[in-house]
Length: 340
Image (cartoon, rainbow, N blue to C red; front, side):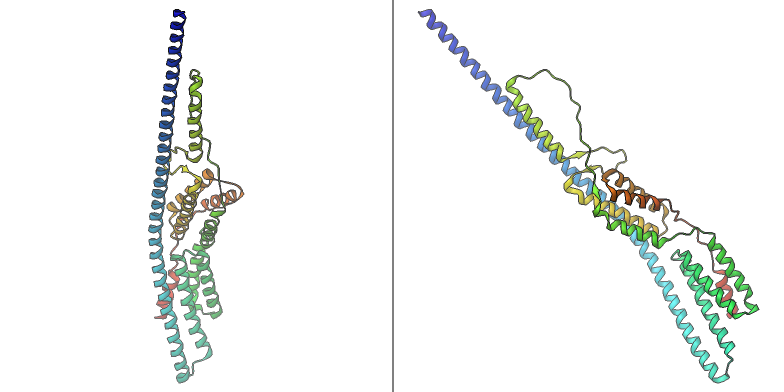
């Protein structure tokens, strides 16, 4: 009987030791679970913070480029304003000549042919000034040629053999303009402006699923399966919020749905940079901005709207905007010498 009691006591001690061992393992597993959750949350916060900083840096860089191009555009605008002031002075001078002609008619009774010729020469001078301004400052080849054609028509109507050298110079200027490619700068700038307005209609492509290399391990005990599954669930939820891609180009390659605005804004800045570079005839910046916009469209967007915008930008990339504007001032200089 004493032996039975002793054996029963030993069994009870063994069971109590096993229970204590199981409880210790469960407590250890719970500690590892909470530690894993905290680490994953810290990694998630750091990833999102890095994403926000990188997008902000990229946007600041693009804004600096826009500022430089805007400064160049303001310089061009000042030059255009000066040319407009000169044209205004020419119009004022023409008005003064008209008044002088009126006085001459009143005093000397000029013939209608003399009056017509004087007026025609003033109009020709005005048109030649317009042609030079459109070609050199606005890069408007079509507008410059049209002004030259109108001046030539005025000369033809005069039928004055003394002005034949002037007609020959105008013909040479028109041939020089005809040798240039027919480039519609205003139309191209309008296409870029329309594309920038339609950016918000683009559909962002779903980020690629991130896969992690796993290694096979021995089967875990039954009492550890629950906390390992919990860790895996937390990791899957965090991975669905943050998608990290590594791009050798060095550009921003991190995208989360909540920060879609930054992606749209950066693409809009690229199109605006291309438009300003186009107006300034800066071929290098124009090509770079368009290529960056095309790359982002292909990488981050999808859908018919994206495809239509890609077609537009690819067509604009094929245009050669860096052209050498010829000097068409010979006819204007000849006329000024003739009128002295």
